[in-house]
Length: 460
Image (cartoon, rainbow, N blue to C red; front, side, top):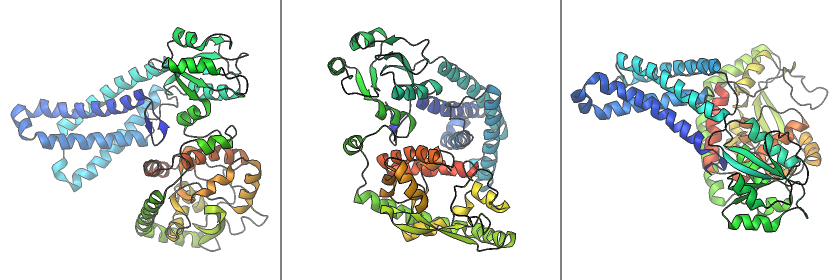
């Protein structure tokens, strides 16, 4: 199974992504060959390759930023066509800017327009075939679910509600019928041999998802399956790789102690700190004009200070003052600390916009330079909420073993949280980041943060 930064990506999703890039490249390249003639094409072959590669990269980035590679969420063909048109339109604007700055990269108008039309036709056909295959669960890997309780139901929900999960449940095995509705999925009692069930359903994976393993785990059958080439996967670990989060309510201390991850070496910390200083310095320099304009607007819009300093909990539980642009009225917390809410009437008009595009968080780059925060990490919370959540949510304090971040895995994977339930759900992502922390994961988070900021998702 392919994993990128610790998260599972089905082979077919990678094939789909690369295949789409190949179709874009082939469409433009073919038009070069067709209209230029053999002699002219051979004379400018390298230049054609570079020009075609540029179009391919720009168009694929635009498709990504318009959520056209998020196939877990159902979209109608009309909606997909609309977003593809928007993505390509935005891509054409980017290419126009590049062509203005670098005239040598320009593709002749006739080649570009006909290539563009060919791209639209090829991608429409490619996506139709791929989505049809997803809906019919073609090429999905069959798995046997050992368990019929809450854990098995949680995993089954993810697999059956995400058409691009890459798996299909071939059968359930348990003492009683599962909680999850399985009208078309066979159910077997524990008294049947696991090897026979695997052979019957041509499955090479068993997911052990028993709620209580004591006295119920068919150890000898599982060993027999393993010796016959069947992979045995722990339910909690399988869920983690599938969703990019850890089931906080189901893990025990032993799982955390003995599992891989949950550790950072000196080299990683040193490199991460160096990157933090570089990005924070660059960010402060580039955003200085925006910050100056924002400060003036905040001062003119409502009485009170421009900056808002608030105590947050950082590394090892040490408190520090986070710096943000003030986005609420000066008397927003005259009755004490409360969660921020959707359409919060305490937020000023400019403050609402600043939160959506993350302008209010730009001053936090100073916290990064001081070493109180990192560019990537869990969101820092206020002491009053930390104390409350640490009592109610298991392992909540583990998130303080690394520096809090301006952005993070939970921030890009889960909408803004404003309740205990939201805090629990975000902790599942924070623990996943803590377990799989790496420079590649940080890079992916920063890349996705750019998308989040550009499309104004998640802020309050």
